[in-house]
Image 1: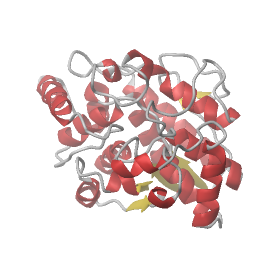
Image 2: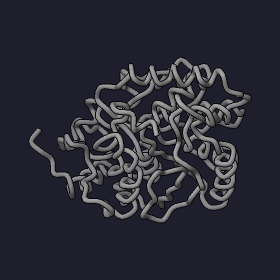
Image 3: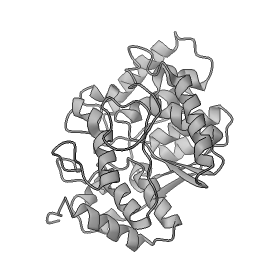
Image 4: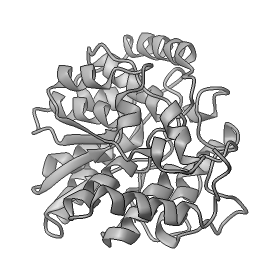
Length: 317
């Protein structure tokens, strides 16, 4: 629910609309188009959603995509694995994820299931407001952290105010371990992702920026082998964040994919280079997986251009 705080989240047309973003992105990735509402998958400035990148990589490489609902406000219109979660609450005011332990256990079940299905798993996320819960968790675990944002200009001051209030409330809570930190000031995605990491026996990649670094920090706190984190160069180089420093503090490998959008010839995708959107919906991980499957950077760029131009023609640069 933090994404409904005015000015905090760069996702969606407005604060309340941010709650629908995961649903629309999921529709785009699975169906190739948004069907539940009349909407185009790009920002008002014409910047394509990162879900467009993930969809194009799925088309290129043929890898399967499964969505897991850890606690969406709105029901999904596409097939998904329901983790029986509830929306994360505002950590300034109350316990954010009351059923964190239950979500963690259901994540453990999912990790065991995936272990018997695939030898490589790329785990992405879509949590509007999630960089702020990530900052709450990283600070609570003792890391010197600054996080990224989907906006060109990060609402850093607002994030810091929220974190300070949440940590003050946390100091009066009965916190015994990392799962209690998720319960009080995290979000449902973190609990499920950490549970999957606990039991998955194949090669796991956490696909996302500072949000997945927070998940890596939680996994490290449990002394579980920490998966590699994969993101985009646009998050790694974000001056408002300190991704490389956080990764170094945690002791986790961070790989940043550079799709060279600055020279891709599309006015919307170029906006990633000035800090709009940057990452999301496992986009960096999807490009990384396509590379692992043998596709070259020109293949990857051509696939992205082909898909985004079907709904978002480039304007003159």
